[in-house]
Length: 242
Image (cartoon, rainbow, N blue to C red):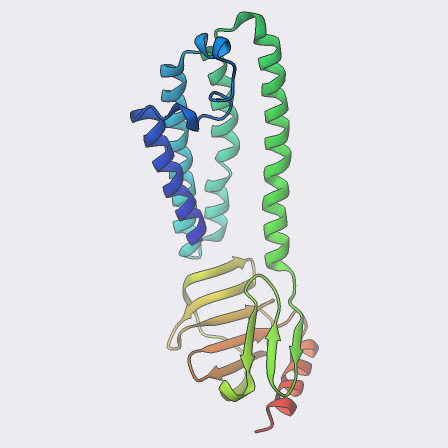
């Protein structure tokens, strides 16, 4: 996704600032620690480690984003999973730069807490994103518009529709420009062969597919069951009235 690439670039910039421009205030916990405590931290070594961590995470995020953009979703997720190895390793290694011997126990407790939070929070966030993306949208149709809910919600005014068709197939996906794809679910902006860029609201690989040709671009709708899709098509045709 484009968002992954953007976050990757920001992480890269942060790594450069920490490692090469001594922006130590960007290191979480260091700038808020008591002055006496900071005296016993090897900040040069720690900043080098944090900078390298940022570079590694930036690489993971950007590569994952590029793979996702090219519709290699499985490969994108596999690359992103490297964060579960890189981050814990860096947290463990950072302990050697803390020279506060008397506070090692507290430091280790903090490390364990951070690890637990990280390992629990990340799967929850990723799982929530996958669930929300895969969730079937609700569709509201009336004489004025058709509205499709979800993370790539869309409202199409009836007066902006040129034509509506129902087909058994869709063209080959060339590239995802800004969207979500996981398994058979395709949502957002995609470029299709011989059709150019349009918006997809596809829940399964089972026909039929509703093609809505707008004054600018197109949208394709497909729900998890053929009966549901047929019902939406019939409702749409009644309200469109052409």
